[in-house]
Image (cartoon, rainbow, N blue to C red; front, top):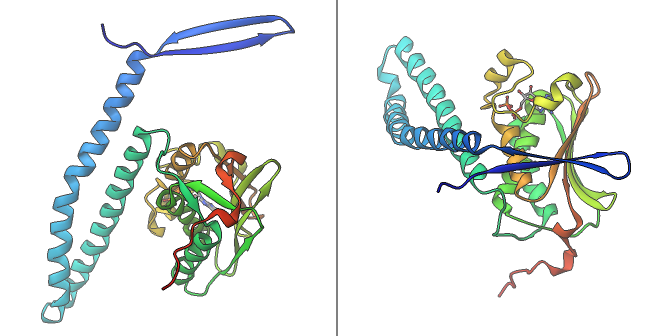
Length: 270
Ligand code: ADP
């Protein structure tokens, strides 16, 4: 009496013929569930030992002036690799949480202008003045969504632009009307991506240049996280890019997700 999972597909032939196909994907569904639980459990279990390791390393590094320089360098290497593992574990946990529930039900009106300014400020410090970052806002209104998730998705796209576009590039964060929809865009005029890679970019751990991406400090999960955050907001990601012509990552939101800007409740100052 276990629940079955069925997938239906309707194909249209000419004007009046339809083909309906039903597939029993119960087993596939169960395997996918097991994979998700396994990743979530392993990531969770790794968190505590990594925190302990990071804590001790910090203490030793604080007193590293009493150690031979080769040892001090070793400790610093250990610290940066521990941080990398912590980022990976946090991203894996975030991704499993996003995958479990396909819709976000804690939507509030988000002031996209404020959010993009905050993301730009953080990206400025990461860039160290090597990129020209700007924010461009149309009079679109507020976006109904989960602010923390949206912030982390757009921040991933912006950090990627800083990492991969190349020094001296322009990076623009936009909130604008897009046909009947609204979109948040992160555009750069940097190195760009060969279109053959684009369909696979949101897969976990897919990277265009594996060696280089690992050294930039990314986890390989950034765009997978963006895709899942958008799914939970009835939205999708469009990627336009060509080598040497920069890249544009566009998050497209349906009109139902947008409210007039005036309706954002502001906290009154005393
Ligand atoms: P990570 O950055 O950790 O490798 P992501 O999922 O965030 O993982 O990105 C996947 C890949 O997409 C990156 O490794 C990089 O090759 C490519 N990429 C993402 N953003 C850009 C960009 N703005 N310009 C060029 N390549 C990009």
